[in-house]
Amino acid sequence: MKRIPHSVYATLFGVVHLALGVNLALAAVALPFIALLLTTDPSLSWPALALAAVLAGPGVAAAFGTFRAHADGETGVLRAFARSLRATWRRALWLSALVGAVVTVALVDVFVLVPTAAGAVVAPLLIVVALLAIAMGMVGMVAVAEDPDARLRDVLRAGLVLAVRRWPLTVASFAVVAVQAAVVVAAPALGIGLTAAACLYVVWAGGRYTLQPVLAPAES
Image (cartoon, rainbow, N blue to C red):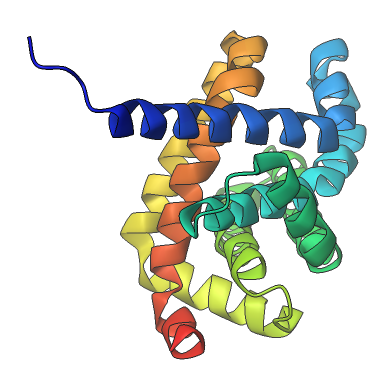
């Protein structure tokens, strides 16, 4: 039987180490959100959950930065996460707050308007606004991780325009996030401890490809 090369084991170990390290670091940053999600009824505690989700936003950007550092050869996962968190947390928090505010207002308005006559017309538009805000947020977080010094308005513009222009990648990211959400609901330990990094990696890879038109000039 042909022996498996040592490089295969090294690559596999590196991937597992990256996933577990990112999951651990992300869980630490998002601890308030995770605690509320596991110990409260989301239908009653949604305002606190929305706030906690905003505070967890910098952890997502730091995870994206960790993936980039790993792709560049960095082996220290927690060190890369901490470095990316320090570099991106301010812009990531502003971006997370903006997306969280738009999504929260849009969904509350949908809930209020659905029983009314105007709901049939306005509610779908508000849902589209919420989805566009989330799409912009996903791509924007990748942009912040790729260029921590980018101006927030440039991140917002690039995130929104390119998320729409390259909509197949955006739809794919939404699908992966939806699956991850289903996993967290069905098995929180599995979703938080194992699959979160895989989900974010797919979103990061898609977002990085989406941002190629604006990243390529900077990288060259």
